[in-house]
Length: 322
Image 1: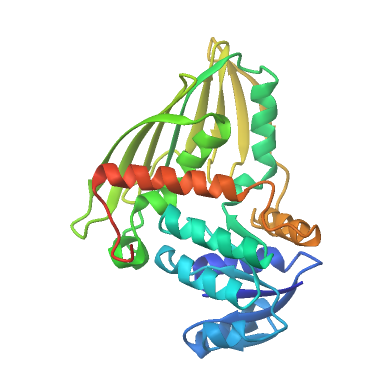
Image 2 (image 1 turned 60 degrees about the horizontal axis):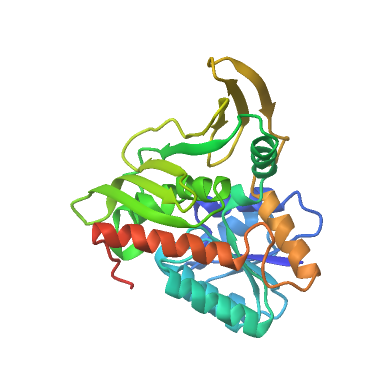
């Protein structure tokens, strides 16, 4: 599969490292708005061709699968360009700015029979199944609530400060606690309570979100782009609790009993850097003639985007590109 990267920024380097070790992937092309940047990236990571415009790369008939790594504000336009040029697409999270954009991309992918997937890497990792197996196996009894937190000081990143680039904590780090809750509690969300500390530019710096589910379960979620958080997810059960270290890239899962004694600890399998799992899933789906990945189906992408829309609506936060 001839693989291409659109917008070779920081996160694209992690993807390039992952695909370098996947036999079925041929590192073929890189496109940037500046040719010199694409050329430097291609040389560093062993890609065959470099392009100074996205359109030029997408006109190359040999490109088969494109990873879109541009800012959130541009995901819709760039993914749409890829689909319209007949390319399979893996789009970095957050998938788009809102659910309407996500729905339109999904419509195009299905109409054209092309794979379209969201690169929410935690959905594809082995730790996802490990967590489910422990909960379903009754390791902590009946589960009724959870908490999840993720935050880092990131004010130095321009794309997160700028409303025009769909910045803020929610789409970048807040999506992880939200996704953690939705993957542990599979029911429908019946209530949302949320507040945010906003920046002078009008994007969210710190978020606090409470989700009530129809079955009575509760998720309390926090995220920040101005300070460190513990990055843990804790699932509370009737006979103990489960602690996930690193909800954005799980390193260990710990089980505690009602006396706060750790009764079990599980390390995740060794990985290149975690990005390989989503790529392998995409390759499998393409081989099977699917337009979506089973680990992150289109319905789940839409579910997340609609929830993020509802949370932002409570803050009155709208991006200029909407």
